[in-house]
Every structure is written in structure tokens, then in C-alpha cells.
Figure (cartoon, rainbow over the protein chains, first blue to last red):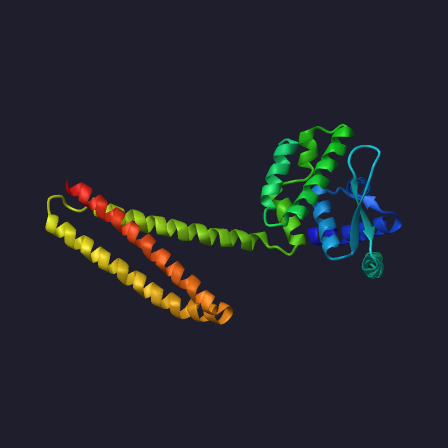
Length: 103
Length: 176
């Protein structure tokens, strides 16, 4: 899959996931791996970029097992981005399907 | 690669970031690897999932809008300049070494020429630097800027003089 495209979709999936519940990195990697194979080397820099661009925010929460974990939560700005993403995605998806059915 | 080696090299690649940021990243990745190991992966496998360190660092730095390629370019320019200076120094010392023995007068006059041209270069540099940088510095920092500039020029001159003395001593040693 095209890397740029994959990254865009990945960002949308991350936003969906953290909009349901705050997550830490490991959880996100596990969850996204159910959709398509995704490497830590892709997810963590993406999370860093999304944090720097204020689509998500981070905080530390103590865990029963081991040291405190860094959680990611969606911001208002991130929610707006997700709404736009979803709209774009649906249009894209519909258009691709229509194109395929017309063959 | 094991975990500590991986984290060490990554930290080195991320040197440009603030220490807190870097520590934050390293701690998070370290914890992730620990969790993978708990799940049954080996240290090596867990590290491999992060992919190539250079690419990883490039991606992370891109998140801060840092272009690692430009950084590398800057590093290359510095390296090239240093290499060029080294080559120049070497060719000068080679030239001196290759001077024919026993011609005292010839050697001395060559030293004299080198000496004069060195000071010529220093003087020209100083005038140029003083004109360009001096104006900016005196505008920005007032009298203090000029003071810094003068001190710098004096230090550079002393450095040049030391280099020249070294060369002179070298030539005289050869003559003995």
C-alpha cells in the first residue's frame, strides 16, 4: 500500500480509537494490527506528530504493572480533524466502489 | 540488536531534541519493548519491530519539522571544510619537507615569503571581517560587539602566528 495513503488512513484510525477511549502506545499498536500490519516504527512517530500538531494530548497514568504509562487523548482540534477525515473517506470509498461496479 | 543498544543509538540520533523530549520518547519505547518481551517476544524481535533506526529517527524528527537530511548536509559541509583545511595544511608541510637541503638562503627566503603572505591573508581577512561583522555587531551590541570582534581577531592572529612559528621551527630543524 502507498505509504502516504496508509499514513493518512492510520491517522484516522488512531483518532477513532482514542476518541472512544484514551489509549497508551502499546494498546494502539495491538489494536491497529488487527486492521493491517503496522510497525511500531510507524505508529510512534505518527503519535508524536499528532501530539505536536495538537490533534491529541498526552498524560501519564500509573499502572499496576510497572512504571506509569503515557496515554493519548483526543483534543477538540483532533475531533474536528476526524470529522473531516470521515467525510473524505466516505466520499473516497463511495467513488471507488462506484467505479468498480461500473466495470 | 538488544534493547539497551537500540535505545542508546536512537538517543544519539535524536540529539537535536530537548533532553526532556528525548527522555520521554526513550522511556515510552523502552516500556513498549518490555511489554513485548512479557508477551513472549525476544528482545531482538521487539527491537526489530521499530524498523531501521535511521528511518525511525528521521520520522520522529519530521514530527518536529526537523529535516534530518538538511542536518546531515550541514554536517557534511563542516566535514568538507575541515578536510579541505587539513589537506591544505598537509600540502604546505609536504612542500616544506620537499625543499632541497643545504640551501639556507633559499629556505629562509621561502619562509619569508610564506610569512609575509600569511600576514597578508590575516590582514585582508581582518579588514573584511571587521567591515562586515563589525558593522552588524556594533549595531546589535554597541561597543561590546566591537570589543568581542577585536578580541577574536587578536586570538586568530596569535593562532596564525603559532602555526607560522611551528612551520619555521620545522624548516630549521630540517636544515640542521
